[in-house]
Length: 203
Picture 1 (tube, rainbow, N blue to C red):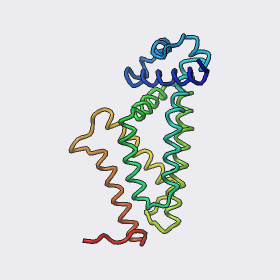
Picture 2 (cartoon, rainbow, N blue to C red; picture 1 turned 90 degrees about the horizontal axis):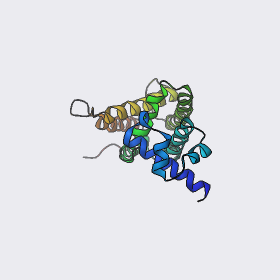
Picture 3 (cartoon, rainbow, N blue to C red; picture 1 turned 60 degrees about the vertical axis):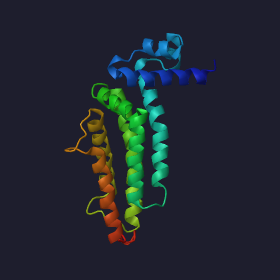
């Protein structure tokens, strides 16, 4: 079996194990059994459980970051981009990506190497968001006294916090996490109309 195929099988198995049992119960032996490969193959391709987890995190994040960068590189109004980001959140909840990310965050509290990798990953996301806010503010969008970097930090933390609430089932009438996220798009649209970037709503 080609090396690339074996690596992909192992990553897919690790992903399944994290989703089924959580990071705390993840073992390289379970991953190897699910992937149908000798345990030695995990050590050959990744070296250790920690390196396997880091590779899984990078694998899961890469396509999402590219997707988000492409979204914000477009010329649509920020309110429309925000709405699409909320759609992506629904997709990522359904695919299990959000669960994996949050499992990694929890593990990172006690594992410096994982925390450092998460920090680097989040920095890449913040750069994308900062550039997006800067682009729209340069076009005349007024979002108050906050800088693009501050807005990016707030947006990132709002989504991460919503994800945590949703994963533990803390989403109900008194705490409508996804509904609140989408409502932020309405606030952005109102600012865009004031700036002349969106037409006034018609009756």
